[in-house]
Image 1 (tube, one colour):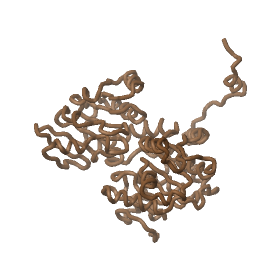
Image 2: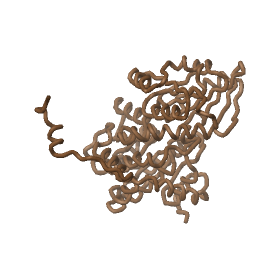
Image 3: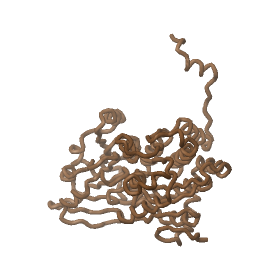
Image 4: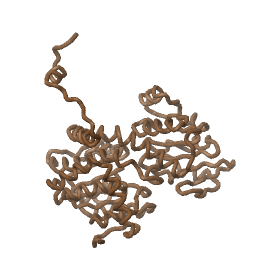
Length: 421
């Protein structure tokens, strides 16, 4: 039955389909399910108002339902204009969670939705990209006094809030969920790797096995995608600015070169850096006819689309999520999903089983924030080690995997300086 709450979504009648998809994802989110059972009993977030700015997906829905049974009063908006799954948004509204998100919303609507989430007067923020926290600090400063802290999900957002801390403008503590080992080592690598391939193939139906794929960035996300592209037969080139990551990419068996050298070679270019203009005008000027460009970093700034528009004589949509730009010499370049997250715009994002660990970190970090708010300062914190290890332990248990335990003798040996050769 539809609840009488304020929201802005595409169509409440999509809720039935959304509920089924949320339930399907939940069957593969065993860690979060265990946390939800405990939250239902203990209510660690009782009466805490949470404003969340996350990708509105089935996995996010299960996180929201976990926070809800834990006592939280939640409002959710989208962290990307193209990542919302409209049926999931509808289902969450029927579960009693106000949602402000419509797939394909324009920039004006996107920020209206963020402001609507902030009007909830949150005690806690939950962000993916830091747009919510940034808007709060710029446009809704009168609400900051309500906030005890927040969490940040992704690399780009962590970069932004660390900049806020360094510049002395961050007004409350943030736990950087992205920095948890059980997040970046699995979500960023395995999740981004698989879902990026999924989004590209759904949008284009190209054969990776015959393609030269240029991967910009060899962080955890870049590693994951490069490995999976190679596994599907692609010839992979990595571009980097970090000498250590460049060495690692080369030792992992990839070709490594500057983007300008890779530009005329690539059939497919994928950015995963979190920086601006990684694919720039001079790169696109050198690309071959038919080259495809896409992004799997958080913002669409990684591809200089304004420059491409300026250098093109025409452009048109040739498939869903595929824009064809025609250059003066007749060459055609193709940009996927407006340069936004290809894995969420053209596909469904990360598989539920890997988001399980990421969102378990979110839930437990929110609980930690609520319990330790008086101890935390206006800075960025890494997820506490005990939470990281608890998520790993629960994940192993859900997979039916047991591991060894250190004996007292082994613990003593590892903590001693006296033993030697």
